[in-house]
Image (cartoon, rainbow, N blue to C red; front, side, top):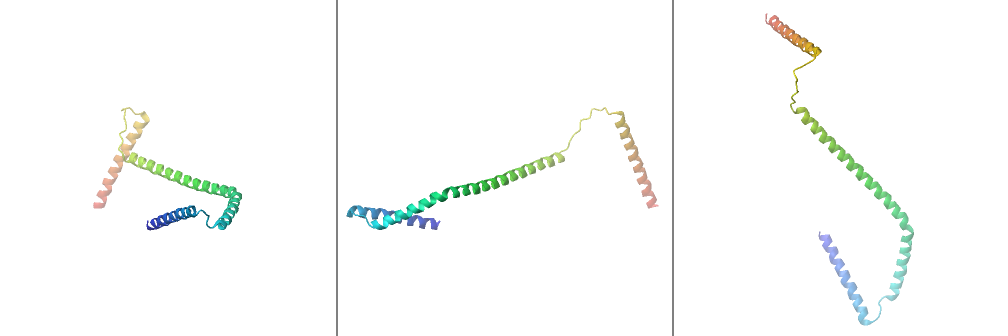
Length: 140
C-alpha cells in the first residue's frame, strides 16, 4: 500500500513538473532543449519502426501462449467439475444404500420360488439342530 502511495506521489510531482515546464516555455516564448527534443523524436521513431517489424511475431507468440494457458485452465476446470460430479454421485449412492427399502410383495410367488424358500427353511432348521447337538457334546 505504501509503495502505491509513493508511486502516486512521484507521478503527481512529474505531472506538476511538466505543466510548470510548459508554462515557462509559454511565458518566455522559446523552446527549451529544442535540439534534444529532435534527437529524442528520431530515436523514438526508430524504436517504433522496430516495434512495427517485430509486432506480428510477438503478437502471434502471445496468442499461442494465451491459448495454451486458456486450455490448461479449461481442462483443469473440467476435471474439477467432473470430480465434483463424481463425489456428488457417490454421496447419492451411499444415501441410497443406507436407506431402508420396502419391497412390494404381491403375495404370489412362482412354484420354483416357493420350493427354494421351503428348502432354505429346512436347511436353517437342520443347522440349528446341528449346533444344538454340538453344544451338548462339548458340555458333556
